[in-house]
Length: 217
Image (cartoon, helix red, strand yellow):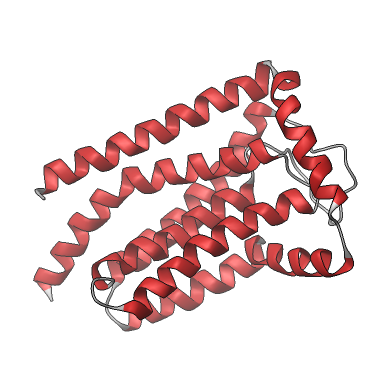
């Protein structure tokens, strides 16, 4: 596939994700009672299945979306990439997790100013609810790793297994926020859509500079 065609496909996917996010955000902002008809029953279901084992599991899992954990994971991966002379990969990972997810999500929450769910919160969570920062950082962190591994996946069950882990882990972090009562399902979907939009937009440029990196080595 030519680079221009590949870029077109990825940018089209980016526009789709961003459009869906904007539609969802508009509903959350101006018709919250409508979206609550879907959100609230799901939240009530999560409350109904709470147990000691589930609470311990999801309380542990959600920590992987906390700032300190993400910083540690990113630093560890960036160190490995830098030592392997994969500087483009390292730069892209830092850009996605620090600037786009960290700063971007924090500022976007002010636009919607959605209060968190009224159900009991099993963990502490501050700031506004939409879009979910944990969902956005999980899709950007683990999605970036998934795409970095993409060229090595063909014929390698180990890489494919690692990619499957990235997807499952990102989804579970989102579910943990619902179970713990600190985010509505629409918050999670919003975070995923916004993160996926940036990933799809930036990926073709990452591929371009990664190729230049390979040729210059």
